[in-house]
Length: 201
Image (cartoon, rainbow, N blue to C red; front, side, top):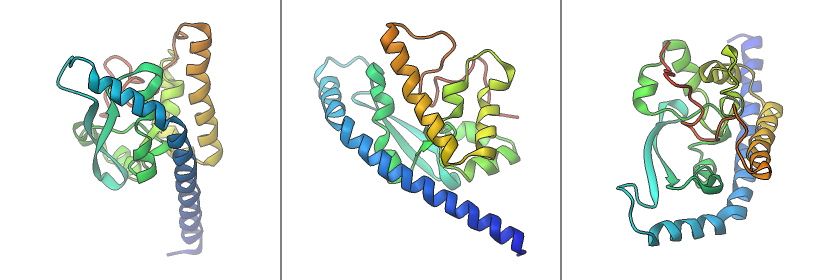
């Protein structure tokens, strides 16, 4: 292996270490902060009359880093984005990153082309991501698949922090205005997908 390749590998490993450290520190802090609200939401869901087979938690198979399959668990509510925040334990465990491409179901991952399959396996899927904060703008270059690919090519700590800031700002602005701003995506792994969107090439 040449010197250039070794430097690139070392840089990639350092970036992954910083990213994982941020996930652990910020993910744990957020989990402690919203933990009481998640407990109250879970108790409320458990006590209310059942409205379907899902129950308190939704369980969905997703493909993670290196093609590893894991069960994504989310609270069965979208109030105050608690479904999203209830995935924070996955960030602490390492199934998800705070920022990354949307976690795909196994059948979606199976339809990926070779190039997309390789970069997706090299990144942890994210709690939020570039596609979630930029999709639905109506612009062709803001298609979720293109945004995820752009993130894979340019990801780094600075971009992650910008995306996290946007992820907080968008729902807060909507809450202040009392309505959702047209053209902005909800922060979930399915909300950002456009009608008819397919992950296949």
